[in-house]
Amino acid sequence: MNKILALIEMSGGEMCSTTPGLLAAAARLGTPVAVVAVAPGGGTGLVAELGSLGAEHVYLAESDQVGKLLVGPQLEALSAAMTALQPVAVVVANSAEGRDVAARLAARTRAGLIVDAVDVRSEGERIVATHSVFGGAYAVESTVEGAPAIVTVRQGAIEERANAATPAVTTVTVSADPAHSAVIESVSARDAGSDRPELRGAARVVSGGRGLGSRESFVLVEQLADALGAAVGASRAAVDAGYVAQTSQVGQTGITVSPQLYVALGISGAIQHRAGMQTAKTIVAINTDADAPIFDVADFGVVGDVFTVVPQLIEAIKARASR
View 1 (tube, rainbow, N blue to C red):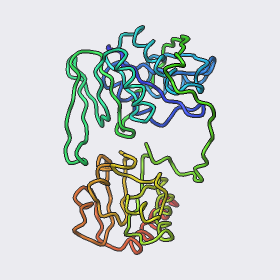
View 2: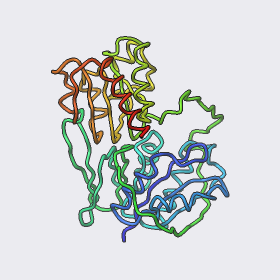
View 3: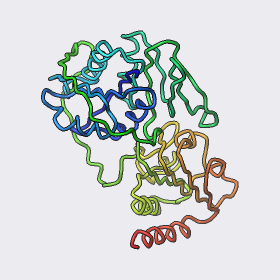
View 4: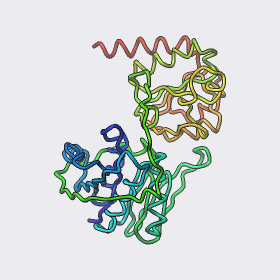
């Protein structure tokens, strides 16, 4: 089968949450090959875990520059894997790091670049990607004539998982030119202050809007999120009103999410917000305004006061969990 490279992003020595979806996307298109840039000897334990997620081949690119240069080692890892394995496609996460690596790789190899795909498939010799555009109002397709294609995949968009495999392993040493990469002088860990999932890539998201009325009332969003094991999001209006930090903003000028479940509380559904969440698999909206645009994209809608409906919903979830 055709080989498909998947760049595995690492954070703090752990694989990022985008890994299962990327390997599933690669498995759709051919033989998934996990490409990981690690410090020398840092691949211990990764092979078995990647195999459980569907990698049939693990390409470990060791470099003492990992953690010292920004994206340089990852770029060299993919470049070396492309030369050695001649893949028909490369998939990377549509993250800040992933987009940077993908663009550099496309320029270096003169390959076609497809950005922010929410679905991928193969048609003969072509890779076809689906995109959600114009605020989620349209789904369009793009393709690259000839190989290889480099595709960035939106976090959370691919929900299935590839079959587990016992991967072959290749270990190489790579080195990046420091002149072509930003140097990482120091890293400061940021305390998220919560055990909730990270918003980007979360399987479940509960978001609140201006309808919550105040920063104090926004706690209702957090309570429902905790009951569901979900991440907390917000509309731009809620962020501008100071109810929650900008890092929680979902939308065209915030974070784009594609969870299995998206719950919108007191959110009217302006187009810039819908652009950031419309590809969610199931959307639930609660709003007092029956004509709110959010109901146009919701799978389930409740016309009612969030302060009446949500506490009852939380109690029902807790009662079901205690059975």
